[in-house]
Amino acid sequence: MSTYMMVTKLSEAASSATASVQDTGREIGQRVHELCPSVKWISHYATLGPYDFVDIFEAKDEAEASQVALITRGVGRATTEVWIAMPYERYVNLAKKAA
Image (cartoon, rainbow, N blue to C red):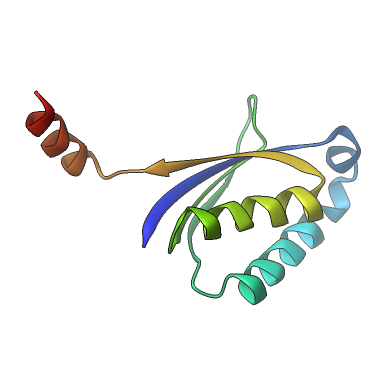
């Protein structure tokens, strides 16, 4: 399993329907659970800035992480970006080997 970060920006229509944000989140969670049962949610944050939400999750591969983003885009009427996250110590070791 690899760790991924997903940033989400709600569309204007979705962000103006504040009452349904929680329902939309539940629907996304249910769809991900059904279609990507090995995904493990680590944390979910609402943010102030260019993105509305940051999610950290584990997925078996980039295809499964992409499916999480596609579900979020479709159900949440949002745009997403997904980034792989590497533990810092692993990065340092790779950098030492590359130097």
